Length: 79
Image 1 (cartoon, rainbow, N blue to C red):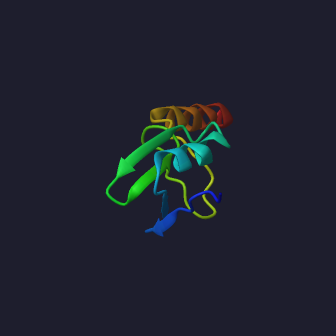
Image 2: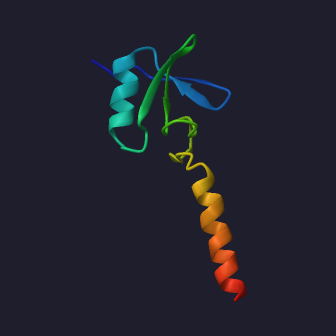
C-alpha cells in the first residue's frame, strides 16, 4: 500500500490523514507539530515555526533569543 501524498498549497504541504503527516514529521524531530486545517494536516517546526513544504528545512522560532544572541555578539565584537 502506498503512503498518501501531500497536496501543495501556497508553499505548504497538506496531508490527507494525520497518520501520513505524523509519518513525515517522525523523520526529523524538528518537525514537532501536526496541525489540522480545512485543507488537511500540516506539519510545523514548533510553535510559530515554519511549515513543511518543498525544499523547506525545519526552522523553529526562537523568539527574542536570536535577537539577544546577535546583539551580544555585536557588542563583544565592538570591544
